[in-house]
Length: 200
Image 1 (cartoon, rainbow, N blue to C red):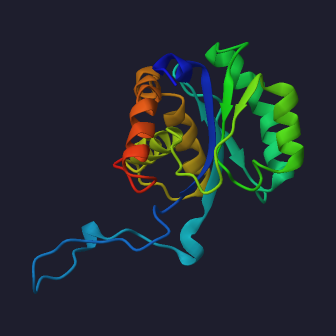
Image 2: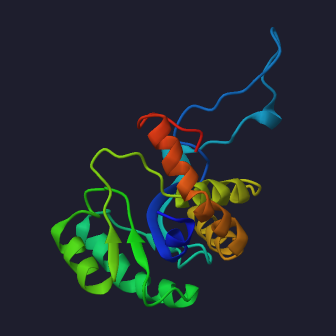
């Protein structure tokens, strides 16, 4: 599709943020025979200190609502999120009436009640094949947001939520526009790599 096609696409997704950073192992580079210094160690607490699931959307214009998910993410939760946030976000971005909804192949996204709701409330839904690569540019926004909040020493879930919201509201429109502009290149690279990994 031409680059103009992507300007009216609404990309939606969820992400998880931990109070103390990553769920996985943290790597540290140090010189041989040197001890770890306290200043480079990440503090930890029992049970990880908590985490926050979030949902949001973006388009070439900017970012939509940031919604905190405080219950199990299933098709009913996802449907409630769409009902509460989709129309508000679209109006905020000014991409009515001919926007296209792009979501990943998560089971809750593909649940019958969610597909049916989207059919009646979205002018067009972009369908992606099963097992297709996740090319959603909002993944880059999640990473961008994580880099911004990690500049602070966050010690509680409430503080994490506060930082997520304040930094989300400051995401610049040109960041979103540049990511959406990269969609044709992303798709071409997937074709070139025959569905394999790309640098995106």
